[in-house]
Image: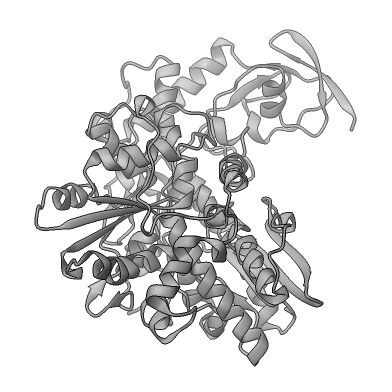
Length: 581
């Protein structure tokens, strides 16, 4: 690639010719502030915070969309530039809800940080403000337009990344807002509650619907047996809330924190992920051998399930009937666990800690209960757990390395990797390959389905049979595969879909990293490394080899896909109207 020569702040540099001015400046150690810019998601030059002074240009230029060219003379920090940036942010603040001390994004707000960096102490602009909208009617997402800065990052994430597009700019001029069409509630549009709008929002305009108060209440109710499960991806990100590097595995401290918060028993959802593989793998083999509907598609991601229910209801027979690991755990906690410990299921409260905001909607699906007992009672995000730890004044970095309870808690490496895109597929192949060959195969690393490529395809030869698989993450890529199925062009046996880019490690309930980090670090890959590393360290790396799973089937379920297993661990789906009247 060729280089160009240019001047930045009076110094000559050689930079690659395919960069923008923003990128070029960063390569030479000059940070130009941004607000609306999010690499590969929102590159529109709307906020004007990143302006620079280019010799010969009539006006200041937005560096995030300005290509470099030979001989450019750029100033990123003269009086004109600083004044323009400061005025822009002051105007944003003039129409912004500035109750920062009560905002969930305080200390992790990009507008707040930028205001501090620019030395803004007063707001010279006062006047009329837009009439705000506060929408907390959905089970997962709260939208507060009084905090929206019209950056468009949520719009781009929903439309361009997820391919859904329920958020858009509404009205014109001063009355412009961002929200669903006709100012409808998030609960009344085909939102999948993936939360990607939240993790891309630079402020507190979009947040999860908190259930922290519910958890504190049940923990203090002595008549309840309160147990908690934590999903695989939580361990790969929770540490970020306490200053740990991205991708640090904090399994031991997570277990200790949950125990210190007062839960009666603490469990790892990885165990239920192993159960899911037993049920899903058996279902796949049954479909292949008995002429069932193929390709079969995973059903672990509730955002993905909502997507197909809204957008491709005619393809619902392709979904596995398996509940997600979250709900499999809940169903077994209120049956298997209750029976073994002599507890009335009605006295058990199951709390889940998930990287996902759509899990909040999943737990209230009418069909996810057994004998009148909801599988899961309360679901909180990784961020909510971090807030609880902080409220309890636990010094996370000083916590000892603890362990989860063993009964319904011991898990295999296959259960761990569920949190990364391709992980469910790899875990399933490990078990299916052993079943088809009748051997305990040594090679368990199916790297062809790993990585952050949007759609991955592979053909795996097992016992002389070619099993064709595909993996997709984010619903735009899922839609591509569904169109192939609809047109009869898909010859796969098995497809894994996760609603969020990168899978659960990048779920809508995970710690929010600012654009300054997201633009230079692939948090999906870094968090996934933590899961694959733990998988590699496990003695047991196949779900069907987990002694606790063998015990479950020997003592309680009989065999995978048995009548009892179907009653507890399988479900059905519904056709959803996009805009119900």
